[in-house]
Image (cartoon, rainbow, N blue to C red; front, side, top):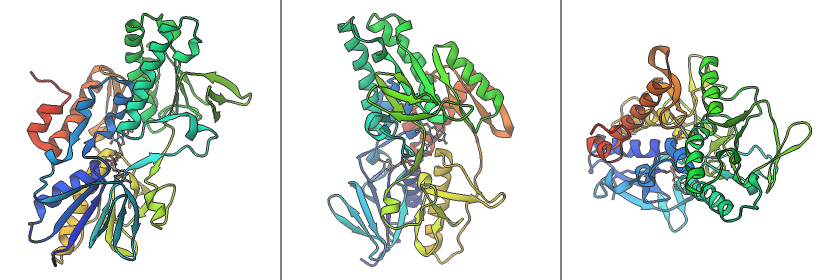
Length: 402
Ligand code: FAD
């Protein structure tokens, strides 16, 4: 057909919302839309720490793509993107190839180990739904194994979390609630199971205000987590982390690295220019020199024109990118001017388990404790509502009104 073909890669926050908006903005006669994703489900990346700790029902985190995106309007292809041939406007998938007129790259993030020796080999990553299920199963296995072998080394119960950023701290927040439950289930003394967070910088959560950080640290410590700040990880071995000037070994049965992310490795493979793991896009979210390619979400650096620094890549930003991208594709097809992306910051709240949290919401209002935890659930639910309306909210939402 002569209809232009729009191909969206990745069904995360950016890809799902872009596809959804394109469906609304363009008639079937105007454009063919194809969404490509590794799996037939979309998962909540911002809830992955809960999957890894085993503190959430797995089914709540996953949404079948066809329940949100009408397969009669959008062609859904469940396959893995292997490369992009920009010259021939072709996406290479594991099992087929696909040409495009307009391409939206929304393949999300991968873990960055910054080359720390042994990390790739010996640590688990909070990277996608499957990698987090592995973590949950591994932790549970350590406790079951210990119970059946009372002679076993206590350190096998230790959970070591590398990186005190947002993901690492939210994960520890879940662990301080999960570990006591595991101890009870397997009849193990709580004092034997350690949760240790290791951060090289002088403080955890470097992007948060000091009073919020102090609150978070104290909350986690009071519930039994050890927070080692200013502690450099030199190497990861099968046994644990080697840290500090003396290469001290911290032994653990479970090792999880959360200390860094970068955009999908497909970007580099496809020959885009990479800056610190991502592609810097123009303010209309297109790549310089490629009028038909948009890059969104965790794959992109979008510059804030006011201070000439990139906006931090977040789910919040990824969803807003989707709006601009869909508007701009429509504008191109209608020969209208393109719009520029401007981030609207709704604040950030970090969870510290189910009933605790802290963060900032609009107008710089700070929240601590239960109100923060409640706000976090509202934020999570707002996204579900935007994605799938009331039906999805009632099915998968965190706030239980009834
Ligand atoms: P993703 O949501 O990661 O989606 C990428 C999609 O692409 C996935 O569905 C994946 O399966 C698919 N994919 C990847 N590679 C391929 C391939 N080769 N072929 C086919 N498909 C592929 N942000 C906030 O704003 N607020 C928060 O509170 C917050 N909390 C977070 C908590 C945790 C534990 C984590 C890990 C992140 C958190 N973030 C938060 C950051 C946020 O999750 C990311 O910024 C966001 O997910 C980026 O969205 P995206 O659409 O770019 O990518």
